[in-house]
Length: 241
Image (cartoon, rainbow, N blue to C red; front, side, top):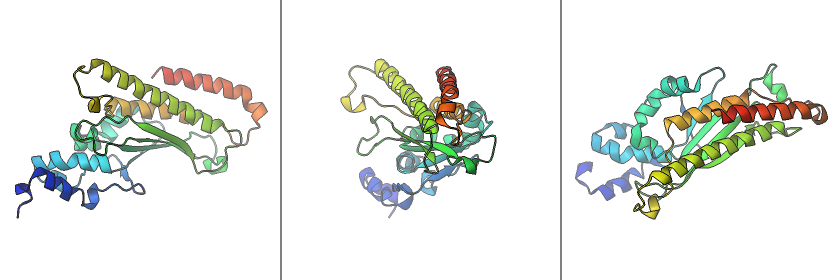
């Protein structure tokens, strides 16, 4: 029996049972410059692509590891282009879990600095919302490995990043809401897809934070003035993005 002769609702139930379309909170797909492949079923036909690609994008956790010295626009347009093109508009509209990570730019070996990097984890729950997803993005940030930051400055800088990204996404929500037809259903209100411009913003914002690391060994009193200056610099650079 051909899959295509089945009613669409039955096909969707079948897709949901396949491993590549089942959510796993403990597994992630690492996105690289060669990440152009999507599940084979998504490439079988135009109809199956339309039906399965959103399921794949919604169920997967995509991990994006960032490196120093790479321009955000170039990263999106070149390094991530294959992956973004493979997902296409319908896949991008259903992304629900994105995990960005970045190492601090340190002048001496990072292992002795304890916190070697930080992450931004964006998540939204699209379950049961159909094509018109409306759940706003939620965000978690942190440093790794998980050890004590003696003066708390690195965690604070990552929290500054969190506020900056959330503010951008909320602005995008407000713009989307303002331009939306007032007759739109309440289920569609507040929809916010993650765009290529959003990718560029998050990458650029993480680059700002990574370029202002704080030593975990520096006494807090001695570091206080330098901390204030550095935080003001980070705020200015984030506001300029």
